[in-house]
Amino acid sequence: MADLAAFLAAYDAQMRQPSGPVPAGMIYEYDGPVLRIVGGHVGRIRAPRDTGVTGAALDTLIRRQRDYFQARGEGVEWKVRAHDLPPELPERLVAAGFVPQQPSTVLIGVAGEVAAGPVLPAGVALRQVSEPEDLRRIADLQSAVFGIDCSWVADDLGARVAADPGHISILVAEAEDRVVCAAIAVFDPGIDFAALLGGATLPAWRGRGLYRAMIAARAREAVTRGYPLLHVDASPASAPILQRCGFHRITTSTHYDWTPPD
Picture 1 (cartoon, rainbow, N blue to C red):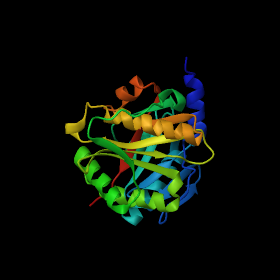
Picture 2: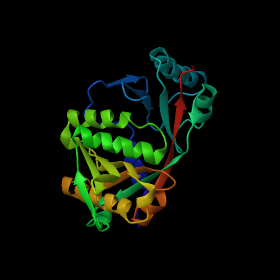
Picture 3: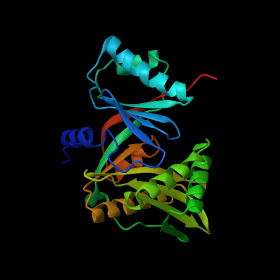
């Protein structure tokens, strides 16, 4: 039986803040207990499980992050897990103008148990990519699937590849030269987790096993690279599939977003 407490402890110790190469144009800087990530599509705040401040001091910390990005004319997201401390953090964020988004399920899988040979539908080929044109096609796919402008994804992926090509694995499934599914794995150094993210499948191609094939392929790569665990922040649509593949729920995560006023 999976030791969920051990998974959660490892997650808190290793997955709170990025440990990989910093892409060009990005700045990672600490402000007290939080890491402020600057230069991306939006600003990001990453924090330990316990920020160590409460009440007025917490309000000041939150406002300082909001005001920093407001001065840059940019939005910012603050990622909060369900077991984070202090318990008042979500309400303090909302009071400062942050808006909670749909929660994701934080899932952990054992790479060796999830890894399998990817089973693809007839006529579909799996390919690892890094060229700008392929990254643009992935951004177009995500825009179509999620119904929002994801054009920034191409530059973001390109910057990650340029920082360290071995740090990221980008997969596409193609049918008749069209990208019908894409997914990403990030391999930060010095930790046990490979992070699986960015999965997207065209609606007409869902239910044919493509997403499961992407999970299996990335799990196999994690095993090959020596990463024993897999981490996913899963959407409500993806979480049941991942759990059927052997992933375990340990908590939830919610992005609290602040957008500059017009």
